[in-house]
Length: 294
Image (cartoon, rainbow, N blue to C red; front, side):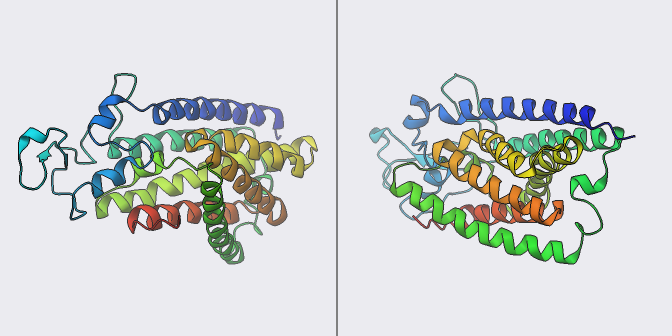
């Protein structure tokens, strides 16, 4: 027999842990330090700054940064190797500790969100939640749902870019630090990001914010799915606090569109695919090809 209340408890615990983790991430990425600025660290674009520091726009193997000591007298304007390879370095932050390397961040994200997702799956199995309530019924998993997800994801990416550009013009930009910190420098790293980390993120977040907080609560307690779509989108936005005020607003709007798509299609696959495409296109366009629209 389905135990709706128990599963709601599972989802509530996961949501609480996720928001705590998001708050911790916000604190890490919002704190700049004198050490970062002294090493040429740009809090707005921390990793791209390192790639562009050299006059020729390249980053040598092992990592380099421009020396702040003019006494070096190097003919190239004062370059010194600092072993800041993005997959092996540690960077000081305001708290005096160390930030995670790119590889460590990728592993941390995949493990944390994967464990949260597994906890929800086990909870759904233990409480005997029907697949239809999760958007995983026969109609929710099909080629049509896949096609709808692809179309929705491409459209949302375009709207997301327009929204980000508009926010920049209003002076309410989104922080790109977390995205830049997760962006790999190797083909293997990109494969891990695109084929493992981003699918895990999209799968877990849609399972929690759309399937559990909208689909299951609506089916089990008779609450309006549209009201739940609004409330879950607010929680979704708060869970992305590390992206700054502009990022929180855009993410909240994106979350509502995904929630609306879930309500209308009753398909988890649609929103997972759309969510994945938005994230993947942002990484590939901005971090892979270095294209900035604003």
